[in-house]
Image (tube, rainbow over all chains, first blue to last red; front, side, top):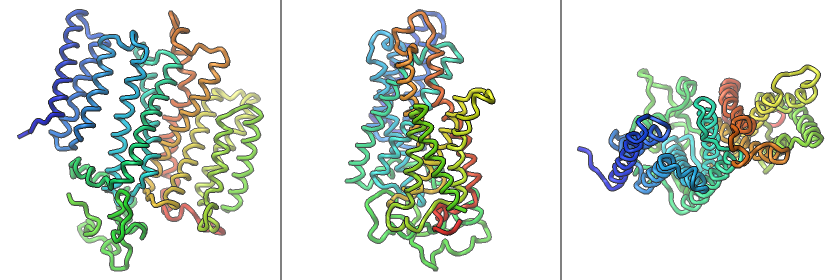
Length: 272
Length: 203
């Protein structure tokens, strides 16, 4: 039985509104033009947080769901009612809001990696730095995507070089804001509780945890990496509390069993 | 071997810096400065006095500045096609490998611990972030050289040629960084993370 929470209601409302507007524009123009297609795709994307939760892949926190819905809705509204053309700052607004949303998604992803992958542990300062550079990468990929769509379909997602540079500046601003927030948030909170509350699917947890093929073959993926950051007096950063302790009698130092599986170290196993 | 490679790398970086100043190529100036900073990274701190980069890393680090210098000298005499795109690809290679070295330094010198896979992924992100800086320089170049750049310039004209010119560094970086990541992964496959910083005197 699927429970419907307030964030889901927001998702459904956004989807219904966008579908309604798209249908109205379709009836007016009698064709699937760029506006109608964008409206329909955005309406489907508005359901994404609900679907992810329903499929038990991940439960996104309500504020993030609201931000995702706001980002998608603002973009779709801008396309459907031509706000991008009539309001000069609409593009700046949507890019900044979207970049903040994407930067939060990046932050959550890195926090999950830091918690579930025992080989990775990130301190607040470097978490902020990584969020910023990964956000910039997302910006690059998005702008290249816009260029490719323009070249292939003849649309004008990129109005001019000035527009592109302004978009990149907005993305940098959004990334910077979230980086600063992440730095101060992780200074005060461990973040592990937040990551556990996301209820990531066990398969995804295993995907994050698993090492490369070579590491698995050589048995290095569960090797003690470094002695610092052990559970005794663990540092206040993510993943630090589960850093394996190097000792000769550590279970990971013994050879792999005949079944090819490694036994989990009790100190480092996740509460899945 | 590492010691000789370090000297070669340092000479190439200084030469690249001089050539980029002479050509007013600001991004390669930034890149060679970054290279020099990355070169001295293992020497910073008390532990670093005994460390230098693994020879394989140094071989990869030498290629971008050498390629840039060769391209500068040979592009016109040999009529090399698309020299700009090649320069962007070399720039991306430099940013990737320096990014990887920065990630190694973060892993070694701070409480942050990264796996090799994450160091590679974050070096892609580093290269993409540097390409944005390149794009800003490119925009300034276009603005000061009479290219059409603002919305009002494109009434009745397609903005595609200007956009293509501006987006070239980012597009090349996006594609080349994936290829470089594959190459770096293959090249460093048999080098353990702990051995990426080799003890001084060793390979």
